[in-house]
Length: 311
Image 1 (tube, rainbow, N blue to C red):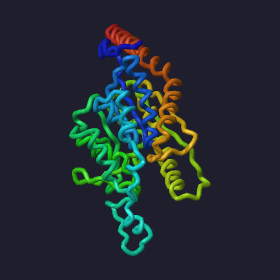
Image 2 (image 1 turned 180 degrees about the vertical axis):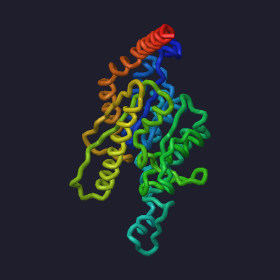
Image 3 (image 1 turned 30 degrees about the vertical axis):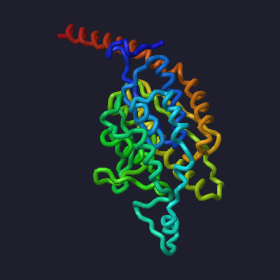
Image 4 (image 1 turned 135 degrees about the horizontal axis):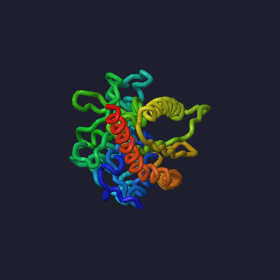
């Protein structure tokens, strides 16, 4: 067992957990937090994008894993995505009485927003512990941002507002939407903020390129775009990072959409299996950090002695 709470800050690594986009598949990260709690590893930074932002925000808001599992049963329902905006549907095809603009979407978001407000109430990102950042995209500039201020309910919604399924949200004069458009796995933010051990969780489902359904083709395009961005940004992060980035890939055998709530048991089981395969790597990275620090200090001391001798 590692008790990082009882070691000094100089001995233990700063740990960051990064959760990728993945709609309700991101609940597969709950077993990771169960494991970290079991071995008493302190997490210093949480980063989430889209679906991953929900789990990151729940953790940052102080909900334990048992409460998270209970909230899934209490709040997650197909009806959250059942309110269709028919004017927007008509607007997509330029039919009479149709309307589609940056505030439009195929699904009306009010039920989903109500759930977020019920769960997070008036909490702000500044209040969360550990520090929690949520990746979003500015739809007017295309800029990706890691939000660290504002109402949690609004930030969580914006981070997962995949246009045109859900509309962007106006926050502080900016129209904000799904973070996957700019950084589906915001590992670079963890690198920039000095995390030593970074645990990055990726949720993968297959691409069905031969499908004739609009929804499948749309999600195929989104997944291809996200994977390309993820590979590039992850490779750059690994190149710039000083210590250890542990990647946990959670593979799903079929497509799971945000309304497929009946898949939650399978999602949690798949997450447990993926985490089991990486437990040893996580423990090794944390245990070996102290040895690395000692070796680095010894090397610095030798260099200083050699420098003094030369003078």
